[in-house]
Length: 296
Image (tube, rainbow, N blue to C red; front, side, top):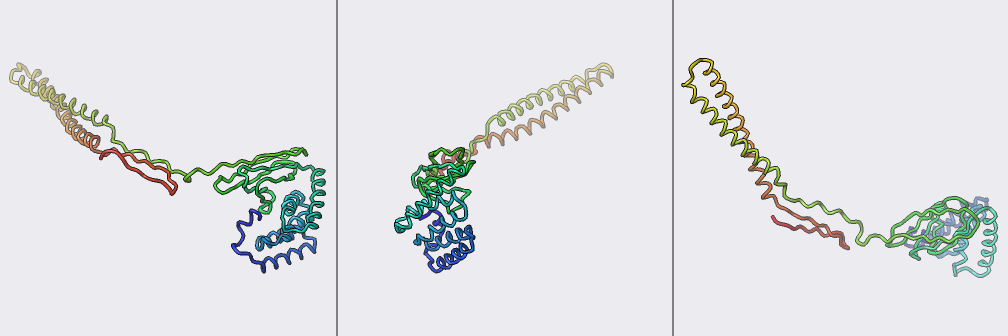
């Protein structure tokens, strides 16, 4: 059975297949072999047990002038055991004449081997009807082509091949297995305790500002104590200015001390009591396991 039949209905529908076969024969009778080939393909998807209908796909493409596609389909047709020997002999004769025609027209006989061996190959330009399983010889016109390769448990890939001359070539189409357990989710970053450096810095600032506040207070007090002993007005004015300056410095440094002390207390509390957790995500066959660890 062809790979593209995987998309066919679960149960065969001989009645629909018979109707489509009649439509395909009618198209062939008018010389519209491309439509006949496409309709035979639809009929075969409805009833895959009908080998004659499958072979008619290749014959119709042959008559439509689509030689590379016809060669691929007729080669598969010959492999089918359900066909009688007389028909197979005729098909082989057609296949031989097709190869002569393709060789003269500038095509490369390309033998395709797959890894894994049961992979399904589609010649993208030929459409889904060109699908085949495993090794097969294709006749491709000179130029670049895309071959889609897929298999259960493997990553589907589109692999480019190039036909450049009439010399036979063999290529291996290798695809990679899917990762075990499916795609993984990056583990969230562990949430650690905040750094202690901000708490240290604000503590140093609070201590420094507190010391300066004490010095400023003493300086202002000393200047005020010298006031009664001044002998002239100018000296008294200078002492008043000094007292005012040191009082201003005292007020600012005291305010800074209070703010820095409060910030230091908050930062030390956060640094010492925020839980340090560790989150690990481990891929499993059924998805992923999440583990939390650490001290709280």
